[in-house]
Every structure is written in structure tokens, then in C-alpha cells.
Length: 244
Image (tube, rainbow, N blue to C red; front, side, top):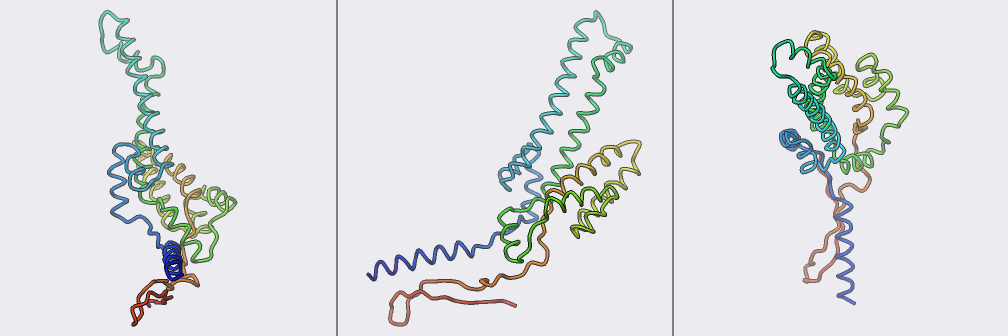
């Protein structure tokens, strides 16, 4: 009976410790590591964050850009093959042949969006286990689908929905920076930034988590352990500790 009792105590201790496990959000170092490793699209997302959705988006963006550029290269090769010689007039003709100029522009935009997405995703993606734990502790519900659509719609005025609905100042400031920079550089990189602001609005509105006002749950501070008493017998102990 004593062996069975000890086995039950050990099993109960393991179960209690699993329930008390503290899941952490990703650190700054992990976020920088993810961003750096994603020079190979999706590598850091999978290896460090186990973020297959983020990796999939990077694969889709990079793959689309590569496919467009490959199509342009093949088009040029075929175009040159049908010419006895090559001059500047032929170059201009080829650029507009088969929408090559449009394909190159779109490919450049896609590659830039992939870089911006890597920065955004690496900096903002939350550990799902941490999110679930935090929501359970503070007793809050995450944002509803209706609130997310409302945020997205109000953000037609950059940052308005982020502040009013989600109290998300980081998301609002990011939108202000993107739109402001886009307007300031409208003749060069501006259209990419404004396009990314729209995508960022969709992304942030659909993924931002309600993690503010985290409080301790009623079971925080309790720890179940098995220790020998002063007579050397193994006994279970329920301990409570709290730091202020």
C-alpha cells in the first residue's frame, strides 16, 4: 500500500506541475533570431516559433515572386532567340512584350512585402500557449470576430480602430508611420508602404490578442511537492508562495 500511495503522490505531483507550468512569450532574442533565419524563407518561423502559418505566407510570397521573375527570364530568352541581333530598340520592345515590365514590378513589390512581413511577424507573433495561459489568468475573452472587423473598418482612418476597439497603440503607431512614410515617398517606395499598411491592418486586426490587465489566478502560488518528513517518511506537501 505504501508503494501505491507514493506512486499516486508522484503522479499527482507531475500532473500538478504540468498544470502550473509557466509558458513564456517569445523573447527579443528569439524574435531577432527568427527574423535573421528567415533569410531562408520560413526557416526561423518554423525552427524557433513553430509558426507554420507565418512560414506558409513567406513561402507563398517568395514563391510567387520567383515564379514571376522566372517567367520574365524565359520570355527574354525566347525573345532574344527569335532575333538575329539585339539592340536598344529590341530591349524596349521586349520590356512591354508579354507584360514583362508589369511582372517585374509586381515581383519587386512582392519581395519587398515579404521582407516587411518577416519584420512584422517576427516582432508581433505571440506564443499561442502563452496567449491561452494569459487569457485564463486575467479572465478575459480574446477579441471577437465582430471586434476584429470593426477595428479593420475603422482603420480606414489609420489607427482609429486599433485605439478605440483594441487599445492597441503599437498597431496604431505602426500604421501612422507606414502611411506617413508612404505619403512622403510617394514617388519611389511610397506605394509599397501604403500597400503594406493595408495588409498590416488586415493582419493586425485579425491576430492581435487581448493580453492586457493580466492578473493572478486563484491557484497561483500553490505548489504540490513530495518531501521526506523529520522521520524520513515520504509525504506530500502543498506549499504556497507569493512574491510582491
